[in-house]
Image 1 (cartoon, rainbow, N blue to C red):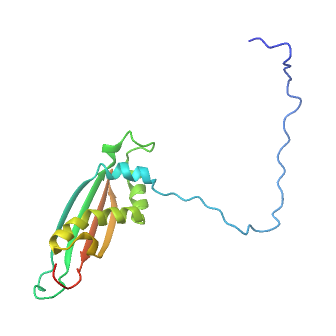
Image 2 (image 1 turned 120 degrees about the horizontal axis):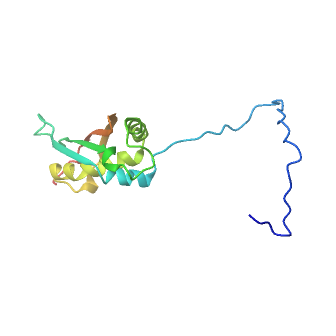
Image 3 (image 1 turned 180 degrees about the horizontal axis):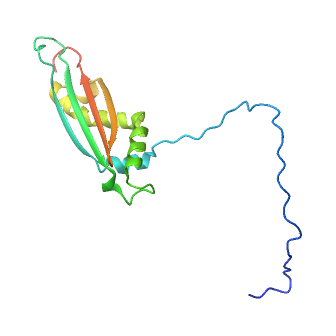
Length: 162
């Protein structure tokens, strides 16, 4: 390797001094933290590779009620093994557990589940989807490399003719 006539190579003169530790004189007023969230694009990719089962029906025993209640259950399975190669993280049990944990509180997962059950509840009630108010609760767990989401939804359409 040649050096140009203008470049001078200097040898280190002395090692760097040890850092001096300073005394803490007060506490920080603002606490900083790192948060992990499920990336929206990652959720899109996972959701696009889901398997789903949706079942629904009318509440029994209320056939004469002016506002019957309709129920739907949704089961979604996402297998990380089917998604390997799409993400940096390994498609393993630990990753599945972490993704399931992040999905539990994710508003976008809730909204996607509502979108899945909405057509079923609209068909059962005979009402347009826009008229329905849906209450949905869901649970997320991991089993091996699969993420399992179970949701229960219900709606009571407003009284009157459909």
